[in-house]
Length: 290
Image 1 (cartoon, rainbow, N blue to C red):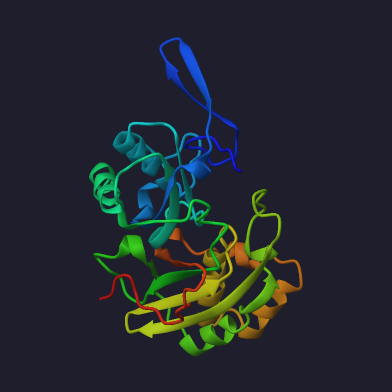
Image 2: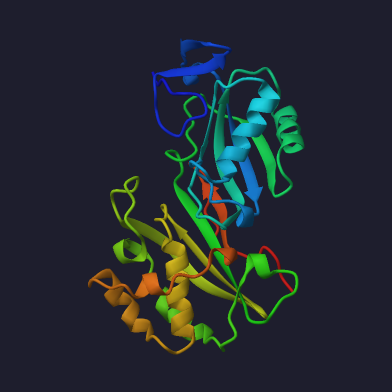
């Protein structure tokens, strides 16, 4: 039996709300509440990432505000499948919502969307098992990174524009070094919430869509800044400034090269989160194209 604090990112046994000068304490068992699986898309430019944090505007914070307004309660939990970085987008983020409500999923979808800012959208709500956990139950996640080969008047917030010519074949030779269970320590920064730096990458490929290159990567999970640094390394290879075979060295020897090559957040999207019995797709397409 799990006891958690309402609206918190960390476990706790007690929740409270203020009522004038008094505080009412209650033990909350979220496993006895209704639980829903939410699929969410968002344009992350205005936000400091998914996870709620002090002094920063976040997707989770906006979701909590909308839930409090819709359900008229502080006693709830919303937890995401992944912590996207500041400025990163999502076309298929998943979160679970634990709440005491009789509202049907469609009513929850419409009710939250009416209360959310226009750059966050609930695209699906479905009932879930009361033990479903958006993060812990996920089997895999896929990200795409959009690289524009030309200047764009419309897609600046959703791409990384590279003026240099990029060699697609060289980029994919470098990407071939990513799959497998490997230590991505030098593709990330230290993170207390992610004690292990080993990640199993299932697929990594750069796809050609004319003026748009799309790096598609699927893995068990991803570390903080990992995909942006993988992308930065691939771009440097595509420019001809780094040999594809050098990528293999980044898993064996201490290096700061991936950190120096970190791609901007604008082109990165959390594409999809996969759960039990869901078939993983290794095909992809741009979120926007021109």
